[in-house]
Image 1: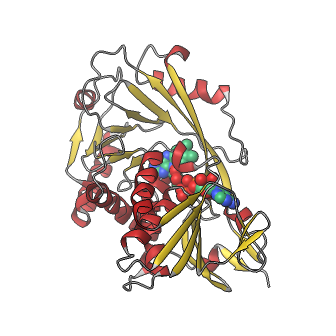
Image 2: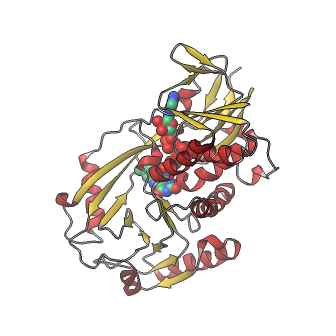
Image 3: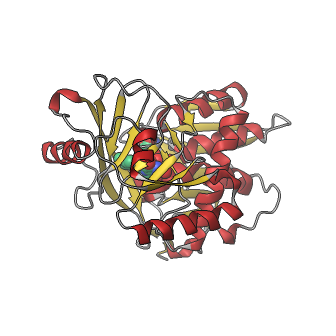
Length: 373
Ligand SMILES: Cc1cc2nc3c(=O)[nH]c(=O)nc-3n(C[C@H](O)[C@H](O)[C@H](O)COP(=O)(O)OP(=O)(O)OC[C@H]3O[C@@H](n4cnc5c(N)ncnc54)[C@H](O)[C@@H]3O)c2cc1C
């Protein structure tokens, strides 16, 4: 029996657990997940899956995000996720100038040739954008990609863990560390596993603290608001996500909720307190698109901690000098999109499954985790 521990039950840990359960055809694997559930980015995330028109130039990141978006659609289908968890509702990305809009359209057409998941691509005028999202009081032209999706990160992770629990996963809601012998330490107990997956997001540096390693991860606070737009009668259809130029992202639900966010706060460490100025700022952004919103419309505020590396790229694989310890981290602001593929690749690596060209997705792990010895 192979014993595997996963530390962290966000999207990376949950997807790794899901694949470790699916790959365990001969009942030879036991998986234990440790998760303390504090400040998980996956629970706080906005949930936008739409990487194709990103301004980022990192090709490896794009490959990971593009194939991640495709994998998400596949997991949703194979595991019968309902639309509360994964909804391919489309994404509209706006641009103020016709030149920039046309450039975006050309990019979408190009990307459409290399991935089907992007779906159909349409150039919309301001009226057509408003037709797609009737609750907008102000709209500008945009590009609609029908393959864009929104997911509920918390429900997505729970759904996959529930499936894995039916096979070989046990979850222990406790904080653990890795001791200086590279073993899991739970209170006074040292626990032995064949492999350990460290999927602790922004906390990865703390998790690996007892090992002679230098880990390039920093936390970034993110806040978003959920507001009620119930009184707006037009709000009846399955609306696309809106990524408006110069404003916060805008995620409308057909039950009268609207998510607006998120912030990127680099100087707040692991702080999880909502801040009034940020709420005002997010409400103001929402008000520029839907008039008449105020504090009474506020349903809740979500706060989470993203993990960033110095070059903003995620990393995954086994770590220097500890070949049985695997990590997946530094996912930044697109981790719901890249996380499931990283989880799957980690499961493949641990089980030494079929050979996959990993270098299309990642830079060397030494760029992010170095031995101090
Ligand atoms: C406000 C916000 C909005 C976002 N919006 C989007 C979006 O629209 N689209 C997108 O693609 N991405 C988005 N992201 C990014 C995405 O949410 C993250 O990149 C992704 O969820 C990271 O997943 P993870 O599994 O690496 O880490 P996490 O989800 O943070 O999970 C790590 C887990 O490890 C646990 N843990 C840590 N240390 C220990 C320990 N010692 N012992 C036990 N457990 C431990 C934590 O409690 C946590 O549960 C957003 C993030 C935020 C914060």
